Image 1 (cartoon, helix red, strand yellow):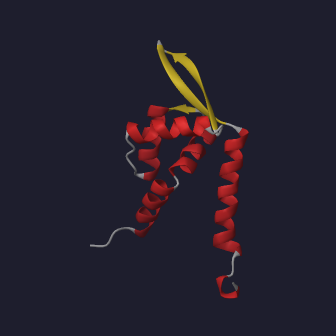
Image 2: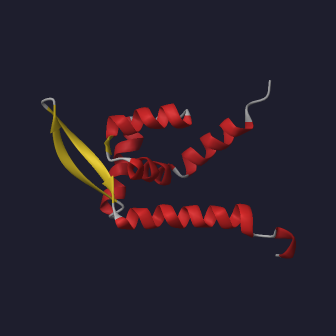
Length: 110
């Protein structure tokens, strides 16, 4: 039985670049932790644990890649995260690097 190559790549990238993927999710729309967990599972097939996500969000906020605000909705208080301009720069740099590697770099000449 062979595993789907695309699934393996998605899982590998998700594990190694989880911070970038979280930033991309938050860039698409501000969201709270539970929503991030569910979207990550649905989009990438990766089940994140609270113990992995919340320290990562705290680190992203400490490094000014995201900011949070408390929002009350339906009587519940949620900590909603949104990407900062510094976070957008990091996502753009990641995108540019991948694009260079996949499209522009001729390995034969290197």
